[in-house]
Length: 417
Image (cartoon, rainbow, N blue to C red; front, side):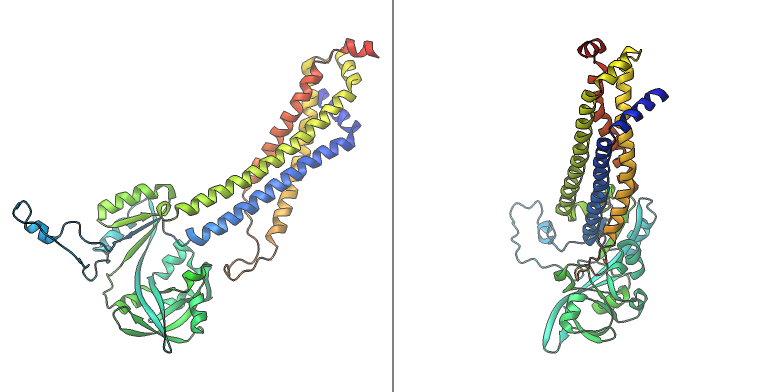
């Protein structure tokens, strides 16, 4: 094998310029594959984060809907002489609250499949700005759990998380704050759907990147929102769950809905169209990357093919001096792999350097205040896939010419000379 590699190296140096061109083709392909894959997946991660970071894997709540069987129907059940006509059914006050929320949360905390839970209370109303009323929803949250499970601080563009723990404080959506001309430290007036008015101190601004969402959504600590609604500390309208395994969300949502007698929505159901978009973008990025590597393989194939025609004399001499067709095949495959390894290793370095360059390019937009440069994914899998695919591509590209070289008849070549 040492002799085979030595001869391959000699042939490589004899056609050094073409060998370098072939290696550069592999280098460029690997460089572009790594940088393109990291860049595309970084963008996908950023876009996914806009929705998925703030979306629970499972949401437990009570849908406001009429009871399927009304009391009057039960009263005359089985009586053929009576028929109930019911219209304009109205829900009772507090029907959206989760019954025995404390017991449900205690059971969920003991479930080994649950990473964490974050209760929530929503108060509908509007902010009074002079004579103008701006519709808004104040979400009562546990700030520490929201930061741990849903990366709340990544979207807190002004203010500190600890300031939310104070009484009668609120974090306004950035778009809503701009409409109100509100600054941190200002006191704003909020009127609930029941007509009760409260003064809230602005301690920060929240910006999700979706302007229409930020014109409506505000955040405050759970006790503050429970006070706005005039409800006790046991009052919750939502329980948000994060799981260790996202794929279990649909099955666990059905299980919890039946167990706790509540409505449950899993993340796949809530964001089905968004996941479809992510899959399409991934398919496009991988398809482009694979095409780049295949094009480099064709370049190697063409160069080796021409080299075989030019080195027919050398092949004839090798076979005449005792080298078998299998040995000649190994020589040209070794030559191809040397090109692939050298080009691939330089491509890994180039891909890493280009990815770092892209990651330093400024990228500032009002929709994404926490993003300052283009996002790039530096996952090791792209480097591993790149070098493996380079070796496979160069091996296949060298195998076809190597088979042709192995079948050369030295007698015909020498006789022709």
